[in-house]
Length: 259
Image (cartoon, rainbow, N blue to C red; front, side, top):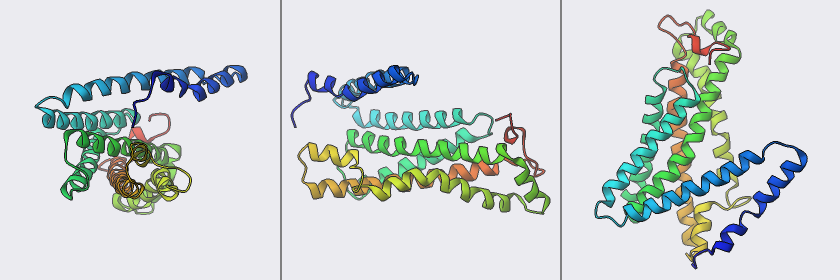
């Protein structure tokens, strides 16, 4: 595959420019967000490309790739925790769930020889897994918090009826988990029908045989769905369980206006 020219890269901004123009014309107020997102993406990806080149030409590439993956997990857990301040121990549970999801994905991909084990591939697979898992994890936490903060009376009624912590958690957690998984499940259902995934598209553009590209994409999709589901299950359970004090009372963070 030939390298993309500067003109080609700039031409990809056409739709962004059109969106910005419409936003200014209609006074939608989204032009700054669009421009900032585009600039930030360019800076971050160029920086990553430079770091990739420096690190993976080094003799210590395996060590650096492991540190890179660990850094991604820590940052993702930190972002998840920032989205739901006040929940005790959330950072720890987010870190555990993200690390477990990425670890299982890497073990499957390289343990079964699906993809060649190399420092670059380790970072790529981990990045795809963590990048898709973190938004679902944040959504799960937000939905769990909303269940308590929007109307804590529902939970207090269950407690008044004699439900213990585990019973209330089994009532709340499934609703939260299902909501958090909807985007990923819907993407998985329509893959190939409405959208062509990025991994498969990249492989096809690189000249890989279509069937081989599809098989690799299936592996990636299954790993992402499993990783997202695992992380959502862990974080949802932890968030719902932490919403009760030792005396089965709803803590301050779960009350309206305090989240």
